[in-house]
Image (cartoon, rainbow, N blue to C red):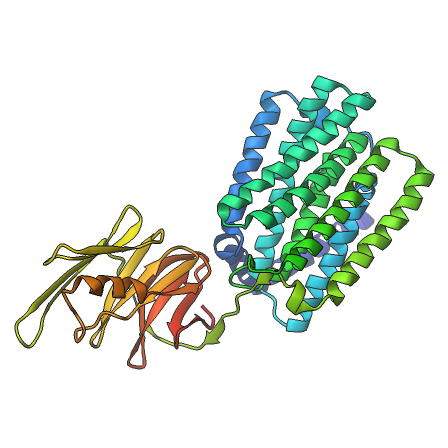
Length: 454
């Protein structure tokens, strides 16, 4: 009896200590972690993409349920690790990219935790969404039609893989140049064929979710600290495009060769070819690394200098229209109307009826007076346009004056902007931009600068 009581008191003591530790951790770190997670979910760099991918995941679940494909997805032939091994080329490349991009972050000594968490979440969502759509639904759908024999397997893997690659041509419509998009289609088609062969052999969709998520995470990790991702430079030499094409084709050959091994499933052949593939991948990365940056750099990256502004007075006043009514010293009236029509900024001289437009898709704009100047700040999402040409000393009713206004706009590349306005600080007014993840930027000395700690 005494022993039982002793054991009971011991158990109570252990529970009490654990609960006290839990309370202590919650009190000290709970708020910090909650704040980090809140910022990651609502202000993380990839939160918009995350919402899109979650919608695709839900769509995939509905399609798989309606088509009654869950039994095929649940029936695994191989375990999780074996399935991952079948995607060895992707795994090797992802690990190398992880080391390279992670190393650069360590060298920089900076690490944006909310963006990192946001990247982890969106990578997982992409892996689930695309694998459930293209392997869970599409490949199983095609496999049901053509069977699992040699011919059926070939048709299934090629069709599903090529459709996966062609799906990425939609990047053209988001502003990516055609050549880069075609290179992406080549590589993703080959990756799709490899993934389809992995699924055909293993029937373990979670192995593919991991490979897909890990690959995307490793590739995107290099830009986790940036306010705006790098973009592909279309003004590159023919030799760069040729080298890029050759590298894309080599990658495609590696992926497709390994796909054949997954179907053939011969251990000795697979071991020899795997060694060759690993060496080819390493040689390709070394070649890319040793290539002169000024020749091979196909990307333009944006760096924004930080500026420290405390207690600035922020004003947002997004207009549907702005009307200038100015009477000069000679009692002459200038009357201009600035407004958005058909997603274009329209500037009209109300006295003469002359008008002109800024030929850009405009989301919103703001006009404010800075001494004699009328500052016009126009938001076109990932670009803004700024003009300080109009001022009370040069207003004119000449029809050419409108052309001068439009030609005076200066274009700035920015992160995705949702609001524009201005900030008053130390007696100076600066154009202000607010990104969709709540970072603040100003335009000073003809450059975009990020407000430190925003």
